[in-house]
Image (cartoon, rainbow, N blue to C red; front, side, top):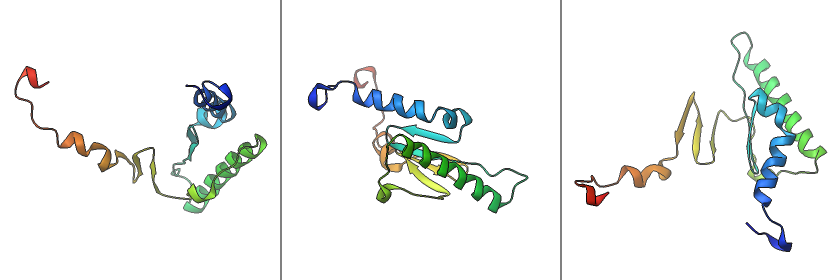
Length: 121
């Protein structure tokens, strides 16, 4: 891929940078990042109250925002969602202890006609 001013591999370079600056959070399993899509997620621990869980989640979000700020990266607040129990992330519904594809993404596959012989494959 060639970008303006002759820059090449810009998406790959950006993804590598994001993986590098968030390596700790990714390794801990509290953050997923794909390009400019970041999801901070936590699971409520059995011995913690809802309030303690929310405080932990907010602490992780603050940590993510601080890392972005230190690297001169900024969020578009209009695209942000905070403290959600269900989200759509990259075409996938996540929440209620489930992960499933958006219906629009699988409609065509569900509507495929049944193949009757090898030549139709």
